[in-house]
Image (cartoon, one colour):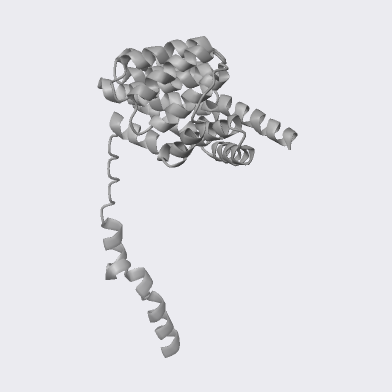
Amino acid sequence: MTTDSGQARRGARPSLAKRHGKGGRTTDEVALRPKRRARPRKKLLPEDYLERAMEAKSARARGTWALRGLASAGDLDPTTHAMLLHQLYLSHFSQGQFERAYEIAEQAAEIGVLPDVMHQDAARAKQAFGDVDGAIGHLRLAARLGPAQRKPFHYWTLGSILFLAERHDEAISALQRAARWSTTEKPLYQGHLALAKCGAGRRVRGLKGLIERLEDCPAGQGYGRFVLGQLAFQSARFAEARAYLEAFVQRTEKGRSAMAIALSGELKLARATLAKLRNAS
């Protein structure tokens, strides 16, 4: 009986697990403890969406954050509005949606914040879907509206499109302005000007010096490899031309998709020159 009654007593006694919750509290105390309220989420401002769009890892994510920023309640200040449109433009451009990208760039240009940059965007989109004259028009506007420090870049971009279109006399005019007003990028612009003169059938002296100056400055990297390769080809320095152009093609193809799209004309010409070099060897 003692055993049975002891078992009964032990069976009637709640276990420690039932009596105590976490931290030594009884189950009643645990049950009565108020539940924590979820903290309200911080409301994102348009500037927050802009920052997330700029840091996005994909073109689609960039566009999503930009659209959310543009849809924010309240009035957008002009700068944030223009920058959100610029991010949306980049999203469409990177995905090959060039006509939509152009529409976005036009909207951004109308706001009046960095209008020269927005016209540069519009020109890239126009060029991408084959409207070279439209691109040239926007670049002329960019050069006219831009501040002094950005004018050389706009004239150089204009000259490069004209050069690819084999409108060499117009390219020479634009590149002369770019080279005249430039500072750090001067060797690149002077080299491109020499290429336009070669394309126009003019005799260009001092190509060796141009190549050496461009090699020795930061502008000789990246796009400079394209110019160096073409200059070396014009100088019959074929091994150097091949090395420069192969480096340009490889770097551009492995870079951001938007950059490869924007430089599609240069890539086409670089590959054509490389084919000439292979056939000559």
